[in-house]
Image (cartoon, rainbow, N blue to C red):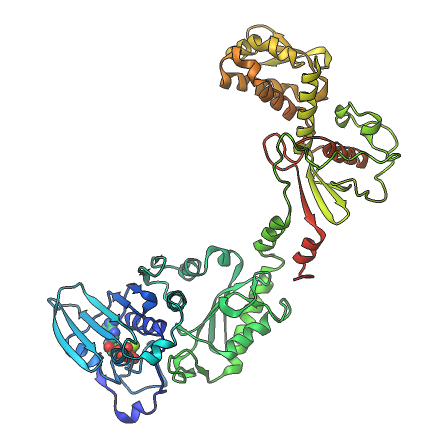
Length: 594
Ligand code: ADP
Ligand code: MG
């Protein structure tokens, strides 16, 4: 399509106004031109927030000499062949952009159409034209804009910071890129972090592009929109109600590939979410409408950012239904960010050094409080063998001295749910017990011989010969730790006694684990340096495992014991043994406080 000068009568019907308001508007016009030219790859380079340099390079159809000369004239366009302002299928149509830019900056356009030997370059500086002169280049067009508003001090005064202008440019680029997933976008320059959004094709192209532009987080918390009503096709991604924002900056509206602001669309989205969201919250959304071009007037705003629907009611209904259907289909799915918020709100205890106990001071159990450990403090093994005593239940009130609170329930046979004055505490019973056994074990070891429990019938464990040999060699050291074992034939080990502190330990697992450790550590002579590690492995196998149901008194006993034990905030592998959620965090999760 050749570039032609529009007749005056048509010019007068075109929404007049300033096209070039700030650097981002130049970027918008130049990239729209590249998209209209059928580019598959667009590279944007900026400097100084676009005021120093804006360069847009494309691989589109290019212009021959006649078109190039005309393109910088006012109201010269190749896009309104039939004067049909009511049927616009391109992003541009006014033929004003290049002329307007040339009036307020040094503009250079180099272009090479298919079939041409080389390119041509034309420069415009205010009223001064130069060229075209030959320019070596690939097919496509390169437009450079330097010193924007240098000759318009009044305009320059209104520019925001370089950073703000760069952000506005990025916003423009995002919107254009969202509307054209099949175009590869690159942005670079000294004033920005580079962007690279390779072309997306196929059925998942739009979602893939939205992930590039809006982030994987949005895509993970959004549901696909699809629908057609009243001649309006609706597509895109809409956030789950739980993934909302305090402003509308994460809302993107497109009509026939053009990014727009439109009250009808905003209102429809608000209405669709009305049942789910507070009035001051905005769902993130990327909404794409396809309507017959004759059904929409894009010629109402100088920057083409607003439009008018012939059938606003139909559009509104189509959008509301598409969103409502999608939300309904999503059922009870909650945003993953709610789970993240919960996790973030949980307080993990600070790692504690050897000097500090897990709590400021071991809390003495108030007199008269029935706990297992008050009556039988030395038998952690009691966990493995629940006594048949009458269960007095947890104390009615939560004494302030109990930092871990009172046990309320056990979940998944491994997590204790406790409540203290103003928080909910979740305890990993296995991790906690492991730490308790370990600390108790170490204390015993320091105090003298480790108490053992003898097995009337030795536990025989079959193992490879070299494992048996290593265990046999380590037997004297292990005996000091309360583990008495001996070789039982070439490929078996008999375990006669185990440390009492381990209770009903998983002996088989313990011995196999130790055999692995010995193989790893190698030198038996250095085994005495490994006592802590060995005790750690033993503690692991002597602990209340996940899957063990605890009675309330057992749970509370565990909590009281944790409070009295150093380092009980972490298991021996360094993971937390409990996490805490404050009442106000819980309220925050439900939006009760802001
Ligand atoms: P409009 O886009 O409204 O037509 P412009 O001033 O932006 O007006 O551009 C004028 C004409 O120059 C366009 O109609 C088009 O024919 C040509 N043109 C501009 N940029 C390019 C480009 N990157 N590749 C090919 N042709 C272009
Ligand atoms: Mg244009």
